[in-house]
Image 1 (cartoon, rainbow, N blue to C red):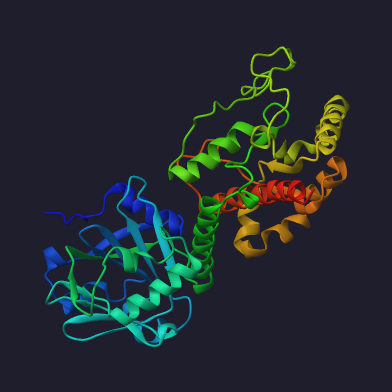
Image 2 (cartoon, helix red, strand yellow):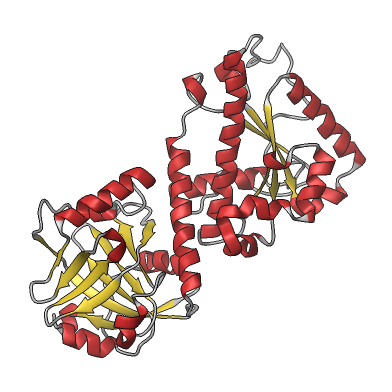
Length: 411
């Protein structure tokens, strides 16, 4: 009879998205092969990179280890060779991960993960007792790390939030499985980039979720997306919402008809004081706080003179009103290459591109206010690197709106 994993399809896909295009092969299952660490090691020896998954009552967590288990004592001392992850038991099943250097040792009963960067704290998996042990001192150390650098729902909070050990006592687990990870690049630098990118993405999302407008002058920010037909306005809206919901959504209809699929305003019926919703003297909360001019980065040279005249006219009105403005360039084709090189310096890397420089010359918008994204369009799965660009753009829009509010506050 075939041995099957306890992982659901969605849970497995969440981990695969973290590491890229990989496949998993089940090597060991404690309820089938027995709670025997020697049996586990025999089945996993010389199998390449593995992932050990522990199923807890309300969570799934584990460790990815790069390299062969027979080389454990040597390989896992090297930096960037392993990382912990957790899978929260919510409706999105979103992967939360953190990179932690560790060494792995074992005895006849336990598998022990030691974190040298945390004053030699360790986490042990006891097979004979079917339990996991996290010393209270380590839990507090990790909790302090979470509170300072990550949101309460992200980062490494799972070690404190899910297991909740009140002391050094053991916490029972339901199952332990080990998989061989096939198709992953066998280099520590790749793992380092992926785990750092995941942390960066989670940090950006936490910042955006925690955002509040400058000095609480308004309860929410109003951002107006303006751009030619098919430039990506609706796709950006859908992309942002998808990130917050944890799955792809298509609330705003996307298309490229002769006229725009999405009309915030009708070009044939300008808003006048006679319009039923016209506000003669809008309060600050009713005003636009940031205008994002949306353009397809690949079509900047093909913008008609008529379109440029219209853009310049609107831009003058925006400037006269003192409203913040940014340029949002969509459909970036090489964002993966740039982000893989160094996502933390992606803006600097992007600015060096001729397309960004061209947009700066044509639009007259400072380089620091030119944002680049690759929206979700026909994809079926979320993408880590796209999330980083989209969240970074949204965060910078918030900053532009805050600059506008701060200027009003000073006046």
